[in-house]
Amino acid sequence: MSYTLVVILHLFSAIIFLGFVFADVIVLPAMKKVLTDKEHQNVMTVISNRARKIFPITVLILILTGGYMFSKYINSELGIFNSSLQILLLIKLILAMIIASGIVYSLSCKFLKKTPNPIMKHFHKFVLLVGIIIIILAKVMFVV
Image 1: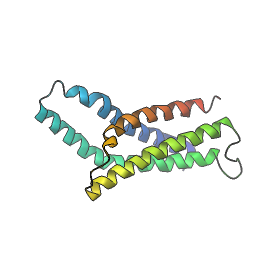
Image 2: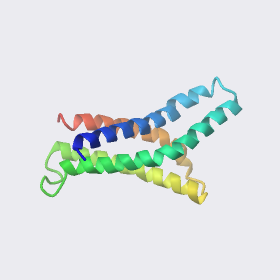
Image 3: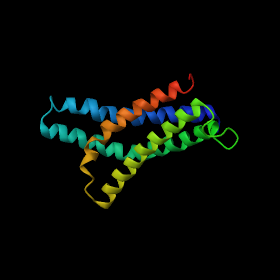
Protein backbone atom coordinates (compact mmCIF):
# COMPACT_ATOMS: atom_id res chain seq x y z
CA MET A 1 0.00 0.00 0.00
CA SER A 2 1.48 3.34 -0.94
CA TYR A 3 2.25 5.93 1.68
CA THR A 4 -0.06 8.45 -0.01
CA LEU A 5 -3.02 6.10 0.26
CA VAL A 6 -2.27 5.56 3.95
CA VAL A 7 -2.16 9.33 4.51
CA ILE A 8 -5.51 9.75 2.75
CA LEU A 9 -7.12 6.96 4.80
CA HIS A 10 -5.71 8.53 7.96
CA LEU A 11 -7.05 11.97 7.07
CA PHE A 12 -10.54 10.68 6.23
CA SER A 13 -10.65 8.71 9.47
CA ALA A 14 -9.52 11.75 11.45
CA ILE A 15 -12.20 13.90 9.79
CA ILE A 16 -14.91 11.38 10.66
CA PHE A 17 -13.63 10.92 14.20
CA LEU A 18 -13.13 14.58 15.10
CA GLY A 19 -16.23 15.59 13.14
CA PHE A 20 -18.39 13.43 15.34
CA VAL A 21 -16.68 14.69 18.49
CA PHE A 22 -17.13 18.29 17.30
CA ALA A 23 -20.82 17.64 16.65
CA ASP A 24 -21.22 16.04 20.08
CA VAL A 25 -19.49 18.90 21.90
CA ILE A 26 -20.64 21.93 19.88
CA VAL A 27 -23.66 21.16 17.66
CA LEU A 28 -25.82 18.72 19.62
CA PRO A 29 -25.92 20.77 22.84
CA ALA A 30 -27.15 23.75 20.80
CA MET A 31 -29.97 21.60 19.39
CA LYS A 32 -31.19 20.98 22.92
CA LYS A 33 -32.32 24.61 23.03
CA VAL A 34 -34.69 24.23 20.06
CA LEU A 35 -35.93 20.66 20.52
CA THR A 36 -38.13 19.16 23.18
CA ASP A 37 -36.44 16.79 25.62
CA LYS A 38 -37.99 13.79 23.87
CA GLU A 39 -36.91 14.97 20.40
CA HIS A 40 -33.40 15.70 21.64
CA GLN A 41 -33.17 12.27 23.25
CA ASN A 42 -34.33 10.62 20.01
CA VAL A 43 -31.69 12.51 18.01
CA MET A 44 -28.99 11.56 20.54
CA THR A 45 -30.03 7.90 20.46
CA VAL A 46 -29.92 7.71 16.66
CA ILE A 47 -26.55 9.45 16.46
CA SER A 48 -25.07 7.39 19.31
CA ASN A 49 -26.20 4.12 17.73
CA ARG A 50 -24.58 5.08 14.42
CA ALA A 51 -21.41 6.28 16.15
CA ARG A 52 -21.02 2.97 18.01
CA LYS A 53 -20.93 1.21 14.66
CA ILE A 54 -18.52 3.62 12.96
CA PHE A 55 -16.27 4.73 15.84
CA PRO A 56 -14.36 1.49 16.55
CA ILE A 57 -13.51 0.96 12.87
CA THR A 58 -12.50 4.60 12.46
CA VAL A 59 -10.29 4.52 15.55
CA LEU A 60 -8.70 1.26 14.40
CA ILE A 61 -7.93 2.77 10.98
CA LEU A 62 -6.49 5.88 12.67
CA ILE A 63 -4.21 3.79 14.89
CA LEU A 64 -3.05 1.46 12.10
CA THR A 65 -2.40 4.19 9.55
CA GLY A 66 -0.84 6.43 12.20
CA GLY A 67 1.50 3.60 13.21
CA TYR A 68 2.46 3.02 9.59
CA MET A 69 3.24 6.71 9.07
CA PHE A 70 5.03 6.84 12.45
CA SER A 71 7.38 4.07 11.34
CA LYS A 72 8.53 6.15 8.38
CA TYR A 73 9.98 8.85 10.64
CA ILE A 74 10.91 6.90 13.76
CA ASN A 75 12.68 3.57 13.34
CA SER A 76 15.95 1.80 14.12
CA GLU A 77 17.79 3.55 11.29
CA LEU A 78 16.50 7.09 11.89
CA GLY A 79 16.48 6.97 15.69
CA ILE A 80 13.92 8.35 18.12
CA PHE A 81 14.96 11.79 19.36
CA ASN A 82 17.25 12.95 16.54
CA SER A 83 15.07 15.76 15.20
CA SER A 84 12.33 18.14 16.27
CA LEU A 85 9.98 16.30 13.88
CA GLN A 86 10.55 13.08 15.82
CA ILE A 87 9.98 14.76 19.18
CA LEU A 88 6.71 16.33 18.00
CA LEU A 89 5.69 12.99 16.49
CA LEU A 90 6.27 11.28 19.85
CA ILE A 91 4.15 13.94 21.57
CA LYS A 92 1.40 13.25 19.01
CA LEU A 93 1.71 9.52 19.71
CA ILE A 94 1.34 10.04 23.47
CA LEU A 95 -1.71 12.27 23.00
CA ALA A 96 -3.29 9.79 20.57
CA MET A 97 -2.69 6.90 22.96
CA ILE A 98 -4.36 8.84 25.78
CA ILE A 99 -7.43 9.27 23.56
CA ALA A 100 -7.33 5.60 22.53
CA SER A 101 -7.06 4.53 26.18
CA GLY A 102 -10.11 6.60 27.05
CA ILE A 103 -12.04 5.02 24.18
CA VAL A 104 -11.08 1.51 25.29
CA TYR A 105 -12.08 2.37 28.86
CA SER A 106 -15.42 3.80 27.74
CA LEU A 107 -16.21 0.83 25.49
CA SER A 108 -15.24 -1.65 28.20
CA CYS A 109 -17.57 0.09 30.66
CA LYS A 110 -20.41 -0.22 28.14
CA PHE A 111 -19.74 -3.91 27.44
CA LEU A 112 -19.22 -4.79 31.11
CA LYS A 113 -22.21 -2.64 32.10
CA LYS A 114 -20.09 -0.69 34.58
CA THR A 115 -20.64 2.94 35.46
CA PRO A 116 -17.72 4.95 34.06
CA ASN A 117 -15.80 7.41 36.17
CA PRO A 118 -17.72 10.73 36.36
CA ILE A 119 -14.80 12.55 34.71
CA MET A 120 -15.68 10.69 31.48
CA LYS A 121 -18.66 13.05 31.08
CA HIS A 122 -16.10 15.57 29.84
CA PHE A 123 -14.09 13.13 27.72
CA HIS A 124 -15.38 14.39 24.36
CA LYS A 125 -14.40 17.96 25.26
CA PHE A 126 -10.94 16.68 26.15
CA VAL A 127 -10.75 14.66 22.90
CA LEU A 128 -11.75 17.70 20.83
CA LEU A 129 -9.06 19.85 22.46
CA VAL A 130 -6.38 17.17 22.15
CA GLY A 131 -7.47 16.42 18.57
CA ILE A 132 -6.98 20.07 17.65
CA ILE A 133 -3.54 20.00 19.30
CA ILE A 134 -2.63 16.86 17.32
CA ILE A 135 -3.71 18.55 14.07
CA ILE A 136 -1.57 21.60 14.86
CA LEU A 137 1.41 19.39 15.74
CA ALA A 138 0.94 17.48 12.47
CA LYS A 139 1.38 20.68 10.51
CA VAL A 140 4.08 22.26 12.69
CA MET A 141 6.34 19.19 12.81
CA PHE A 142 7.25 19.55 9.14
CA VAL A 143 8.28 23.21 9.44
CA VAL A 144 10.30 23.31 12.67
